[in-house]
Length: 209
Image (cartoon, rainbow, N blue to C red):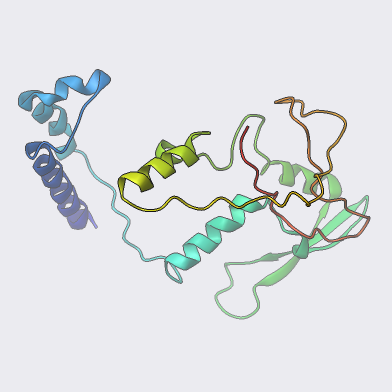
């Protein structure tokens, strides 16, 4: 692994130097001084002595399995409903998978006190003002749609067609109380009866105001 790490380090830094020599790198702000060859070489020198970490183990099941694994964490919190077996004021029972079992049935049942289950569940809830998914660069903020449209225009590609709203469609139901964070109207996505399974896990997509 160390040999591969050093090989990757050399190839990466040589490729970076080639881009610099070809004038493909641009520096702004505090990094503007790196436009000078000596300054760039001095900045790059410590990286030749650093130990790089290269992880080359292939993902189980291929890239599709990795995306499927990550997608479960972007739309759900801690545990899905189908894993819950029973719950009352004293105990919560749910299914879990024991990965220590190499073959056979990995599914097991765990029973926790209700307070302990809630404690473990809340460990997966993000604190206030934290985001599970945060977009950066070209996909960041409210200018994302305009930026993507401009990129497609520069590439000579047609802009994506916006879905036309049916004027006959009923107006969405809203609560009387505004959102405590932004002050906007709070839409009613779904009304759940006792014991009813949610029809949809994802909120509807709306355009940012």
